[in-house]
Amino acid sequence: MTVTACRMCGSVPAAAATFRGHQGFIIVMRFLSLEGPFCRDCGLATFRRMTSRTLVQGWYGWASFIITPITVLINLVRRGRVANLGAPQPNPFGPSRPPMDPGPRLLQRPMTIIGLAVPFALVVLIALLASQSS
Image 1 (cartoon, rainbow, N blue to C red):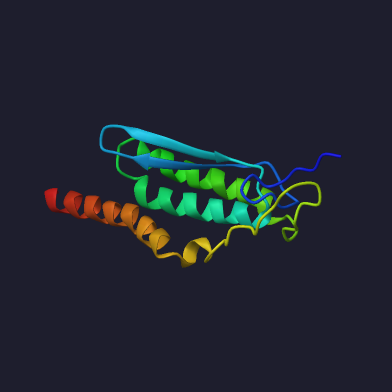
Image 2 (image 1 turned 180 degrees about the vertical axis):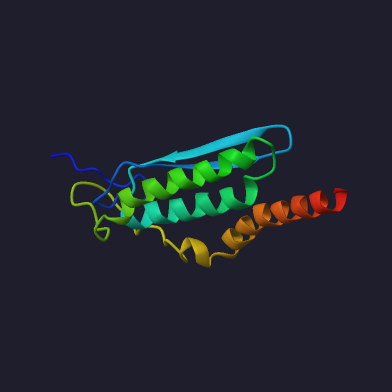
């Protein structure tokens, strides 16, 4: 009998999901991804870590200003695949260890708040500069 186990901890149940990240640099950009299957706790931990980092590191480039929100939306959709799973249980057919700690919710992380402030501050700055030049 085959059971889909979490790639991080080996617990069951697990669901296939791929979480993405984006890092924008002034000239180049880097795309990140981590493919599952994940149990609920490891999946939420991965989603929160990658999305929070994307919100901080993703804005710094012309194309990145468009790609970052798309990456965050894709992660939000894929979050549902793991968030709806039951609590992780040890795998009866293979090795397992304790699942990752999901940590605080996404909007309770300081990095996320800073990451959301970056585009807001940029839009305010552009509006101020535009109003001064008129």
